[in-house]
Length: 181
Image 1 (cartoon, rainbow, N blue to C red):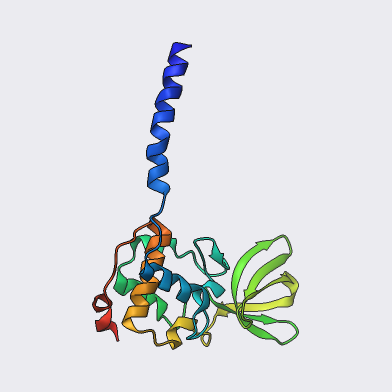
Image 2 (cartoon, rainbow, N blue to C red; image 1 turned 180 degrees about the vertical axis):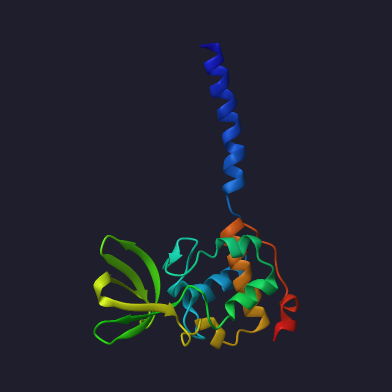
């Protein structure tokens, strides 16, 4: 009984330490500006249209937490500006339609595809027999590739990504990405 009590007390004392690691600092003004750009950009399609982060957005595109936790500012900016991605396929159907999409999954005789020709993307469930081909899409463009974010907007977005991924609230300076214009 005493050992069980001791183990329980040790666990109870350790829990606040674990909880403290998972808690995020409140967002700074810069992080809030980045969040606002992520969710509702006035410069084009917002990131949250296809990406989910910090409980907001649509989980169509890749999870950005890894990029936010490990990517350098230059890598993040280069990724945002990529015009083509390996994730987007051109789906051709028996009815003659072709659309850019991201494969969500296959189950039995059905394929789930996020149709990127729609904003926001629409999840389509197609019988496998309706899909004639899937190949890397050569025309679809990653929306941020066509947006000219200022260096300040870029570091605001990066700050939000980092904060959402790791809780890091360190202020970034526009000069950190200014050479990428």
